[in-house]
Length: 168
Image (cartoon, rainbow, N blue to C red; front, side):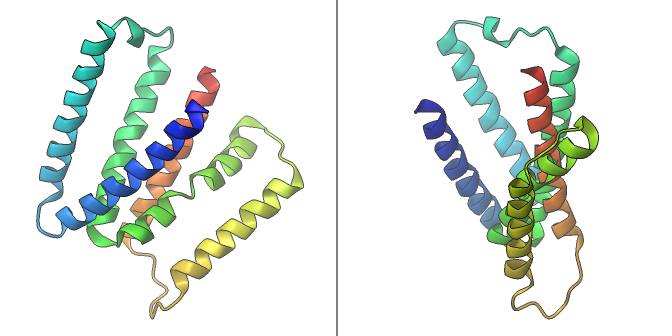
């Protein structure tokens, strides 16, 4: 119920942020966009702290894992903004949303997880579909730094997801 609703809201908010950032990055430097987004994030966090009556909800027994997670989030966000500055929002989000594919790969390689063959077939089909969409109509087959940044953001999100799963 509520989890699904929050997931849908999060996806819509991410798409809206990507579209607005892409448009803004056409005329403004990346640093200004990051500054404004950071200020908005701080205001929202302050409101949440105020509504909940303090920072007691932020206490943790695993500060190191949270620090790594936050660092990966920052790196991923910087990569996302760089990708949006040189690619369209749709292309950027397609590459960024490869996150489940990277979770499957990293989970198998680093965590020793075994997945059903159907999951692998689905992953290959999704990856193939993504490649077809991205390649369609392209003259050059060169992967530029903006595309690499979008993929890097997806990798950072995969690492964050695996850390959150590990934290339980």
